[in-house]
Amino acid sequence: MSLPAWRARIPAVNSALLAALFFLVPTQIAPAYVLTAVMLALWIIEGQLKSKWQALRTNPVFWIFQAYFGWFVVSLAWTDDMTAGRSMVSRHLFFLLAALYFTVARREHTVRYLIAFTTGVLMCEVLASYNWLQLNLYPQWPASLRAAKDAMETAPFVDRIMFGPTLAFAGYIAAWQALACRRAGRRSAALAWASSWLVTIGVLSFSGSRTGMLGFSLMMAVLTLQTGSRHRCWAAAGAVVVLVGSVGGLYAISDSITRQRVLDGFAEARNLEGAVNLSVSLRYTMAVNTLHVISEHPWLGVGAGDFVTAYREVNTRRSPAWNVPRNPHNQLLFTMATTGILGGVLLLAVWFAPPWLNRRRPDGLNALRVGLPVFFFTICLAESYLWRTNTALMFALFSALLYGPVCKPAPPTGP
Image 1 (cartoon, helix red, strand yellow):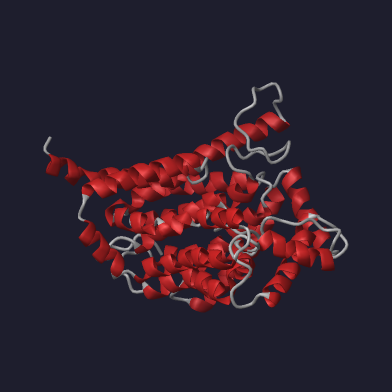
Image 2 (cartoon, one colour):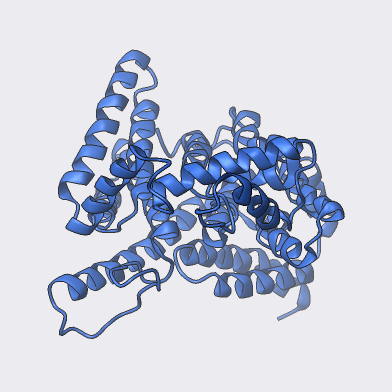
């Protein structure tokens, strides 16, 4: 095969590798880095760098992502702990890799990417179901893959902190596609997507993830609003009913461990200052202390590597009995504490500017463009999910799908 013919096949190969990355989101992150390195090597060998640069140069979302990543790099100039600072920068590498993912993603492979993501989640759901059965009903079964969170963790690769939200977003994707396929008259595909949605509900019920349950319920309400957009009042009322019904329904079918975590959350919320180092109260204390860090370093923050040091100083003054975290379990506060007000503005731009800038794209993906930032903004109130590698990869990949390919008119694929 001639070199030009071999190069001509690289875009298809890289698109397949991108689909593999979607599949890997709920699993280990190391293989994703390896596949990305292979993709990058092929991307360079393919050539056409000038045309790729032209596509990136005219894409405002690419520049927003680069500005967000670049500001963390700039903040190394005033950080004291360079080791921690470099670690912080490395955790945001997926924003730098937008140059690769945005030019590899192909609009005609949209369904392939969605299926790959859902299949990866489904594989993990099967393993999680086995783990639950082995832990609760059949202890004689051999132990399977389980994240090292605690003795009753059922998630196979990543713990419930990342697994639950990934399940929630996969549930939204499945429900959205089920509705789209039903409207298109593709009953078999609609049934397959609906079945995936039901499996996700079942696994969420014993996942132990309060964030996942709330995120899923919120996204079902968002989907209700999107589906009934022509009748806004009725859609809004339906969304409230769906939100409350989803929360109540998930709680009703939850296993005893997950239900107890929900009850513990309410109990801790009633005693935010007294329930020392418990989950909900600790998040409250972390938020308050981080706000003090921000107030003392508002413009530039403390630098990418100095959050723990700055937080420890505030914690010693205000709440010495409480633990010192690696991150405040709130992405916006974390970003502002380390990179200042500009960093916070750039983070909000990362979430909300892209769907606004692309709101008139005629590709049928506007529902997902709204769902992605709403979902991440919400879950990032409970954890720094763009700092967590698996969920950061998930955000980068779906952003590449939504904003990377050149816009071409296509029939709508969703509500």
